[in-house]
Length: 384
Image (cartoon, rainbow, N blue to C red):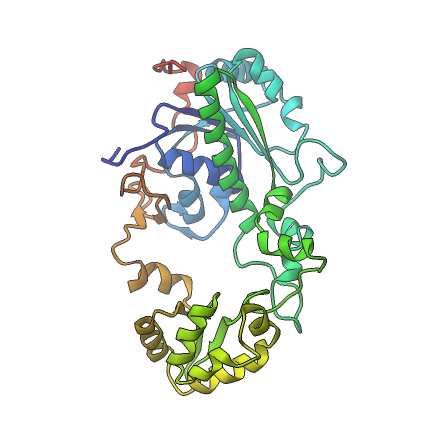
């Protein structure tokens, strides 16, 4: 490990999860120093090993989600492998799974099964709709959850169709909440000696990720598509420059006064149409006309320089490559390269005492750590 402080360095994880939500969570734990053992199907492994894009050293997608982990092959339906898995889990602190509800029980790997051999286990279950209820056994993918949660219907422009967010945000958010739930349960275990079963439904997570839409609903309205603008604040949108779009984000009256002065139109701050945030939002199209009279005569780069100098929050609209490789992230130490594959991936987004916790273990070959299942390596037991 490098010199960063890793807050989970005494934690061992048995990770039965596949593809994205679970592996994203356990990658977060591995970066924080947890010893993560990825339990994979013999001969095939996690499906994400076979998902592109690929280089000559394998899937870049798999590398980004499984850096810092160890791989054990195990046939979960084989009785001998099952007994060995239970022996191994006795040495673990955490189990993570994203089977469809009911499958873990059929495999003899439910929370109750694991608790019988490891009473203080922290067990995390990630699924589309939770472990109970009428929808529990429905299959779910990210796009399904975006559609069912209302996020898709409120994303895009009014004249266009509902739009999927341009990332598997339901999966990733479920992974973040899983890592949070696991860490919280480990803290609880330290205080009480008790384990816990953490149930992470993707639908519930995606609903929780919409506080603005929740507020609109609570006020008696249904959130609708409003394009790039903020649904309740203005000016908070993309505006036309002479060569592209610039983001302007103003959410209070004082800052609107600064923007008005910067536009050379200080009188806009006292215009009856724009006197408050609510009025500005109600008169958003009139406000757009006033703003674009100025912005349309300048390039995006010029506008960003002008607004930066005035202290008005702004941005060009970057693509991912421009964001990750450009000057905006320079010096942030955001990426690292896997020693085995040469694939570049993002490091942990949080800093601990000013440094990013990072694992230096390479992405594992399938079954590279099978010896751990044959004879689990002893570990120091934490005195909870």
